[in-house]
Amino acid sequence: MSLTVVMMTAEHGSRALLTGSRSLVDGLARSVISKVSATPHQRRHRRIEIGTNVLYAAVLDKVEFDSAGIKSDLAMLRISMTDIVDRCIPDVATMLGEDWVADRLSFARVTVASARLYSLCKSVGQEWDNVRGGVESRAILLATIGREDHIIGPAVLADQLRRRGHSVQLHSNANTQSLCEKLAQDQFDGLMISVATRHGLELARKAIRELRQEGADTVVVLGGAVLNEEGIDEQTTGADVTTNNIDEALDAIAGSDVEMRVAE
Image (cartoon, rainbow, N blue to C red; front, side, top):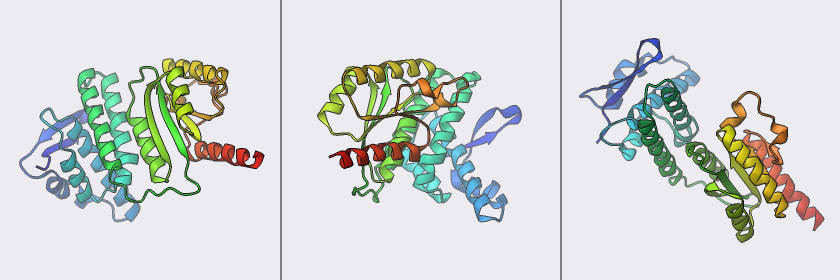
């Protein structure tokens, strides 16, 4: 069944969820899509904005979350799977975080909504049929350290990496021992660590230092939401590369592989 929840932006930045009898996309088509600008770029931007609001309403539905239905609704808005993962899901995650900080939503509702976003991201990722390994393909271990609550960022990053043809293994709530075991069991070209909080950053620093003490020589890339905070010294993370730029991260991992082959 198609979702019938419409998200409207109320005054003073608050968000109100309204229900209607017409189908979600039909209602939006009448009230919003017809007003979209004539230029292609702005049309696409507006569709994504509408889709983000639709998804926000869907993950907060108190009755159910129809993953197939929401994907159908977003497809009718001509929003690609790439934009669902790269734009809509991260934007909704940000909205949920803002709502929790501003006491518009409880922690419980944000937790449930985040879990729904995560399941949607995993579901969309399973539909990719253009992932092909090749000579440029890398094996990457993508980890969070300790009890990091953020799961959406790493899931989005994993999907982006897989779309580029790389093999990615997600490892949540890792510690030094579990990282050492996984790095020893499989030949990963690089380790990416996603960090959302300052506390998580301290745990990541400790884990990276202990990995080096254990003799691990895998390239370590550290990124995540914490790098957007003020006062973060990227030179003291202990990682080989500290960045939120996916191309810089992959270049570092690929560069290390080339150096190893030349040395051999």
